[in-house]
Length: 151
Image (cartoon, rainbow, N blue to C red):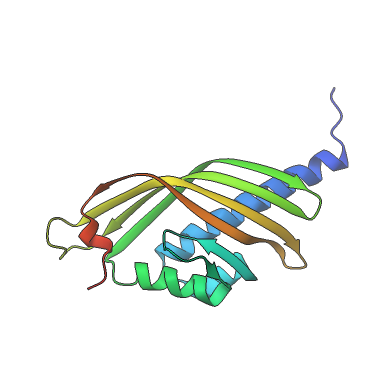
């Protein structure tokens, strides 16, 4: 019988908790629970989410996400193939992303899909793991870009 050490258990718990943070992000986006993002990101987090400028601070990150998603009729962000590396109080995480965006009245069709990956740096806090930096790497898109354009 193979013995499982407490270090193995702690590593598995850390990995599971980091994947839970990545999943909580998707539910916050799709259910428009913007305040829940404060349980995902560190207060001083940064992000590269497809804008020209790096977002600095949780308020800037929430504003960018809210501005992009609130006009939509629906969205569904699916993440998978999580890869986590824990190094003490810090970690890296990456996962694939498939996001469907719907705006029923968009001229040219109601759907826009983004596929890519999230690449994260995290820190362990007293309240659990938090993302300190997130990069969205778009690999491909399909559909009507008017769905995600303002106006």
